[in-house]
Structure formats: C-alpha cells, structure tokens
Image (spheres, rainbow, N blue to C red):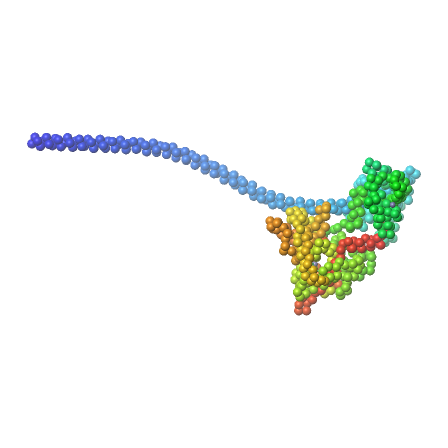
Length: 609
Ligand code: OGA
Ligand code: NM2
Ligand code: ZN
Ligand code: ZN
C-alpha cells in the first residue's frame, strides 16, 4: 500500500513536473505570441499613420486634378479663340498678298507715268523759260514749280493773249499726250485741272472753238535741244553739256572720239562705224571745243575734228532715265499682263496686209498684250505665209516654212492628232524657240477643238508671289527637251531650257514648256526630282485657274497671232471622223524681225518722233 502510495506520489510528482514543463512551454509560447502581437500592433500603428498620410495626399491630388482640369478648360477656350484668330490671320495674309499684288501693279503704272512725266516736264520747262524771257519785256510773269505738279502755280500780270494761248496749249497737249497713251488717269486729271487755273476767258473760247472743229489727234512735239554751255572735266575725262532747259548731260571724251560721225570714221550710207577700236586712245582729251547753238565741234590732239549735233547728243545722254526711255522704246518694253477678263484685240486680216497704220497697231498690240486675233482671212492655205512676208520672212523649222495642223495617221507630233493639247509653248526643243506664232483656221470641226490661252508672264509672277520656292526651282533648273522624227527632213533635237527664263533684273522674259516634248531624261540629282515635278505641277495648276484662262473657238478665217515666248496655248480634243474635219495652217516668226518691222512702220508713219 505504502509502496502503492509512494508509487502514486511519484507518479503525481512526475505528472506535476510534466504539467509544469508543459505550462512553462505554453508560457514561453504565450510570451513569443505576445511579442508578435506587439509587433503587429506597432505595424498597424505605422500603417494607420501611412494611411492617414495617403488620405491627405489623395485629397491634395484631387485638389490639384481639379485645378488642372480648370486650366485645361481655360486652355481649350483659349485654343478655340486662337483657332478663330488664326483663320482671321490667314484671311488677312491673303488680303496682304492681294494688296501687295495690287501695289505692284500700281507701282508699275506709276513708274510708267514717271517715265512719261520726264519728257513732259522737259518741254514744260523749256516753254516756261521762254515765257520768263518774255517777262523781262514786261509781258508776263510766271512762277512755276514744274518739279511738283501738285503745287504748280502760275501768276500772270499784264496778260497777253499770245502768251496765254501758248500756255493753254502746253498743258492741254501734255494732258492729251497722257490721255492718248491711256496711262495714269489720276495724274492726267491733275494736269487738266492745273491747266484750267489761269485761263483767260477769251483764250478759253478760242481753244474751245478750235477743239470743236478739230478732228485730228493732238501730237506731242518735243523741243529741239538747245545747248546753253559746255564745260570740260579733265578729272572725269568728260564734257558736261548744260541744256537750255536747265538739265545737263555728261559725255566721256573717249566715247565721243569712238563715235565721231565724220565720213572717215562713219559710213553714213550704212549708219555704221568705220573707226577701229585699236585706233582709239582711251585716255584722249580734246584740244579745243567750239560751241554753236545746235552742235559741238571738238578738235582732238591729232587735229582730227568731230562734230556732234545737239539732238544727237541729247538722245544719247547717259542719265539713267534717258537710257531707260531709249531701251523701252527700242525693245517695246511696255507690257500689259492679263487674266480671263482679257478682251482679245482684233484686226482685219486684209487691212494688216495693206495698211501701215493697222499693221503698226497690230504689232504694237502683239508686243504689249502678246495676242491679237486677225479676222476674215481667206479660208485657204497660203495666208500665214502672207503675214510672214508682211514682217519680212517666216522662221523655217523642221516642220516646214508653214505647217498643217490636222489629225494625221502616224503623227510625228501630238499636235497632229485629234487629242487634247494641254497648255504649252511651241518648240522648247529648240534653244531659241520661235518668238511669234501664227495659226490660221481653215476648217473647224463642230465638236470640240476649242482654244485655250493664258498669259504666262502673268501666271509666273503669281507663282513668284504664292510659291517663291517653286518659282526659284523653275527659273533655275535646266530641263531637257527632245523632238525626233521626220518632216521637212529628218531631225533629232535635244535642248536644255529653264521652264521660266529671267533677264538680269529678274523679270520673266520667256516661258519654255511643252509637256509632250519634255524629255524623260532628267539631268538632276535624284533628290531634286520631286521638288522639280512638284514645282512644275503648281505652276501648271495656277495656269488653269479660271481667273487666268481665256477659252474660245476659232472660226474659219480667224488667224491667231501670239507671242510664243509669253502666251501658253492649247486646244480641247475634237471629232475628226464621220464627216468632221479640222484644219489649221501655222507658221513661226521671230521677235527680232517683228520688232524690226514695227520700228520701220513707226518711222514710216511718224518719222523720228
Ligand atoms: C499646235 C497647237 C492648236 C490647235 O499645233 O502646236 O497648239 O488648236 N495647235 O490645234
Ligand atoms: N508643230 C505644231 O513643241 C512642239 O512640238 C510644238 C509644233 C508640230 C509645228 C508643235
Ligand atoms: Zn572722224
Ligand atoms: Zn502649239
């Protein structure tokens, strides 16, 4: 029993030990759990703090987002109004371009007026000079500011009818001169107002009665140049000639010697220089000069004597304006560019052949606007040849002296089919394309075949304004043209021409463009091909704008005469079978010959004036 108790006690103490051990283990576990709880609680606190911070920044971000949205809204509104402004700006830019264009035209007109103003002023001054001389005899006293038309005032005292009549005539003829030339009407209006200011009633009546009975056109006569005095300037090696009208001109010594008009130096029958340049002492100075009213005699160191007529000298004055005037006259530079509003000038074919006045007007118009239509020519071949004879001679090309535009089998040129011909100039495959073209309609088809025409100079100047880069490309890139075949004889032409030719002042002087004969060989680096084609396309699209284009249909008996360096022409396709037929005869001439005829006609009609 005791043993049993002992055993049980031992078992109990054993159990207790085990329980204690278990308890201790649990306590340890509890302890570590407590540590984890503490950690988690700490983490929780940290997270709570972070959450708080995030909530705060979320609020801030929401605030920022809101204000950004407001800004975007404001920007959108601003953008809208900017777009509107941009559109207005574009419209304004267009307006500025238009105004610039108008300004350019006004400037051209004004410069034309200024050119004419100079000779009128010259004359006015001469006349007033004479009147002032009269004033010393107590007839009349004038106070004139001829430099400025606006402030021209004339004071008269003890008026004499004679002087007043002269005075009226002067202003009237000056004004009429401008009127006849249809230039700068405002300027002429001023002249007309000025001339009315001091007119004596008697003179007014006198003039009116003259005008009522006079049918002829008033002609403007320049006074003969009178020399007042001559000075020498050895520093410049030139003469200074002072004219009666207050102007002066300089003439270099060497130029005078070079242009001696004596029979030894000049063949007057040929109006040609005999004097050789090797015999010219370029440093020559005169030994003696003698001045008479209308000429200057110069004795040179070798005793050679040269005589120079005052008028001859005056027209050779080296002043910029005199030279410009002379060059404009020589080369008939006064041009008028046109668009679709253009009224084609016409003349009667027979009258052009027989009447000098009509022929002169024909050629002047041909030069000025580039295009004249002749009416009522006989409806058979041989008429364009007559026009060639009227000028002098036609320009022979590989297509013959004259050529027939018809729908031909195996055509050697696209023109000799019934297809459409896009706007072109003829023969850019030549380095010197024909300057003038005649096209005589002998038969016209009922369906199609209408003519289109455009002023190439007008369009090229538009391109210069609207697309300067395209203009630069077309006026600098040399394009290959080709034409091979057989007609007058066999031919194989190659040329290099710029689509737009400029002179040394940058003025457009020739268009060379026929898309049919533009060679597929293009002598350009590959990267320049696209810019070239795109420039050409822009130019052609501009030509075809309705405001630039003239369209009409030729009738049998019509002869188109036009400037082939300036006008681009074309035709619509036409029916040429089933009883339809179309036949034009054409010929070419050149500007040298045409202007030569114009100068001769002018001389025959008006003399030296
Ligand atoms: C031409 C030409 C026009 C026409 O032959 O070069 O442009 O109306 N012809 O056929
Ligand atoms: N034609 C009409 O450039 C040209 O080929 C112009 C000339 C055949 C004399 C055409
Ligand atoms: Zn001589
Ligand atoms: Zn043609």
